[in-house]
Image (cartoon, one colour):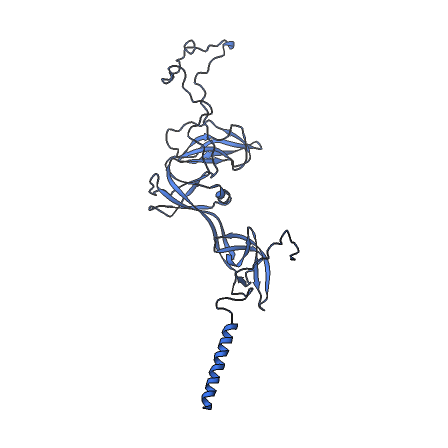
Length: 341
């Protein structure tokens, strides 16, 4: 009987120890606050920031040309072409310091209208003329919240026609800025009226000239375009216009997706976004030293693709960082700045 009592007591002791151990151990998959679960080291890679936009294949889209420098815009009288221009068309120049900087409509497009008055003072990047592409382009509307992101760093565009060709590089035309209604001034009358006070006459027949043809719609009178009327350039919103490589089959009205690369950094020092607290150019990381102690380090942030973020300064690249990143202390309560109760 004594051996059985000993075995029973041993089993009871083991059961009690297991019960006590299970009661005191923390639940699985949880750790004390501040415990570093894992660490990462910065790495280097090419980092690209991009914006995706829906677009549409469009015939003869209008795009805008901008002032290349600050100065005074002076337009030339541009004749209407008889065919699609194969060379750039000079439409005027921005004058500054007595020197002109010429403005040209690219080959394959025609002048569509003036966006500012002749001899108006303009600034760099200001839309000054509109042009119409002869053929197909891809047009994408841009929301105002993405305008500056795209305008400040547009480096390239990739396009994919839905259920069609692509992806392919799409060459951007002009500016993404919204265009006001453009105007093409009326040409001067072929036979200006003479000044009676100067001994002339306003009667073309009396001067031995043929009168201008009558306007059938008006019954009589000379036909000409009214100054200030719009012709070929209507007001537009923010949008991007680009062209596909030659030989790409396009169908008017087909949908497309555009990926706009706004910035690219080669050999950028990056860390996972989970390792950083903060944003908008500044952040904080938690560096884990060899002895296990931790130190908060402020860093300057750059581009991010949603998975990693660029570290522009603050780290050498040899550190080990805790993941997740640090929990920054909450701001003091304005009603109780001392934190007391």
